Length: 546
Image (cartoon, rainbow, N blue to C red; front, side, top):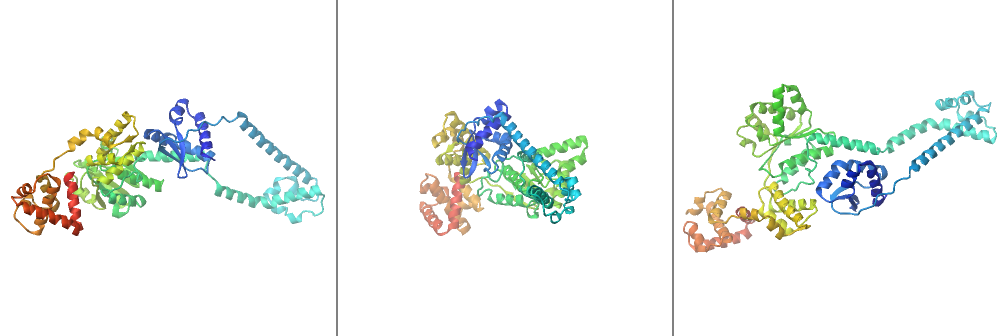
């Protein structure tokens, strides 16, 4: 079936099954198209796409399975496709005429069997058991084998005998074969498919997972590459002692929640019967407090024990709460001893949780502990481009680079900055974001982020990077562990400030300008000859500028 025919018939079906308001608001604006051998349902924005996925995807899939079972899967995207008219309404006499035809066929078959029974009953030479009751030979075909039937008969009677003998000899094995073939070729009906999807959606809603947090929508970079690789391994094989527990920590807004929920969604994708639960530690605390008030200890303990995967976000909020930590300790022990996967997120390293029980801190470190780093420039640009594409807006490369350079702390702030630019874009009724629009929308953020680069800032960055003191850079020591960082700091000062060579020399303990010149030339040569030193220099440039 062609897409045009399918969509025309689908519109007719939905128009008859939905209210007029539902149809006009949600279905009528839809356009469709084909991309990479898939049928695409286009909506005008991401909100409309989410509405279709949550409210109408199951119904659309059921209709597709019913009227076009061999058609490609339906996917949902923001965009504009082709608009088709609704199919004409099916004639009300169609189903009635079809029913009449089926009844006629049934009557013809009954007449044929009656005639067959009448013709054969007049034959006195046939065995009585096969003639007195037409059902007898069907139940016991061995009582009237074909080779015992009389050979000399009239043409009409012989034909009846042949038909009856063939049915007696073939009925039982054919019945078995037909059932077997039906089982092999049976396809679930549209109602069964819709029911299965509804059950799956209900099970998913009980997990508390967000369907948008998947590995497909996760942008990977240097800051989270290792964590993403471990997360995918856990989804494929939860409970592995190497990764149990999986403890993810880092500053706010770096994508911890997205990463751990992607594990749960991927596990459900691989195993629809898996029992998964995601919760914030605040929910765990509230449940525990209600248990204390109502004294429902058994219920509290049992509600968590049957999960294959338990994810608790921001576990740091239970520290300092003795009863809660004690109960969580027993829950942790249960999961770990039975190879049930537990995943925790936190804003700091386990050993830095000052008010957490020592036995919990030690257990948090049993499996895999990974820190998420702030996204690098390339990752921030990738995130911006994906977010803009999701809402149907073109983000030019220079505009994406400008936003990424000015918002560096975390993904949440990056998305907030993009939302401001998108709002300005929609207000001006534009479909493309250029650098002028981005600059105008984020001028206050750019102004607040501006910090002048000083000699003191450069010295501190170099000293911290090489684990030495700032006083060493200003002192007279000439050991390699001090002299090389001092030369690097001088070269950075020459590149990043407008200070003259004598001024830089004075800032570094009253050194001569020729010393600074020698340091700049030495570092320039070493950046080519020693790749590691060159990488250190580039990292320091990024740290100081940021």
